[in-house]
Length: 158
Picture 1 (cartoon, one colour):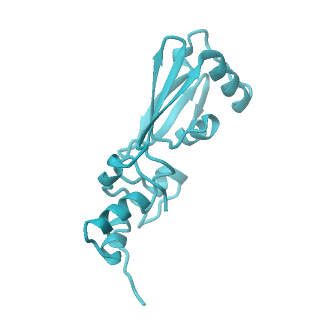
Picture 2 (picture 1 turned 60 degrees about the vertical axis):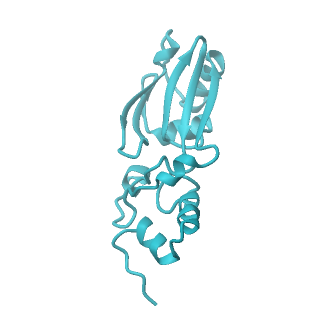
């Protein structure tokens, strides 16, 4: 389980580096209407410098703090797959953990001397969304339909 996806669940391969047949992206658009689906976190320039230097030992950050976090690639589900933090190549999950973000599905923008990070969803985004499953149940879907939606090509057996 994860709490809430970005609107499409993430593959196990993108989240953890290992492909699992039934943990593939599926639509979970109910999640986009969840409370706190979008969350904004703000870091003052010096606060961001302290965190990045502490979390990524040996990192070199340039003078222009708008270059400290650069997203290189993003999955179809919106998860940041690779990014540069200063001169280090990292994963979105590395940044998520370092900055205490709700998910690795995020964008970075700047407001004066402040970095603004907007996250989508909550958790790793793999598998069944608790919010999406609850919304499907409220729409009259049964447990079997919900499981078959979130875990495609799986057989439910006794």
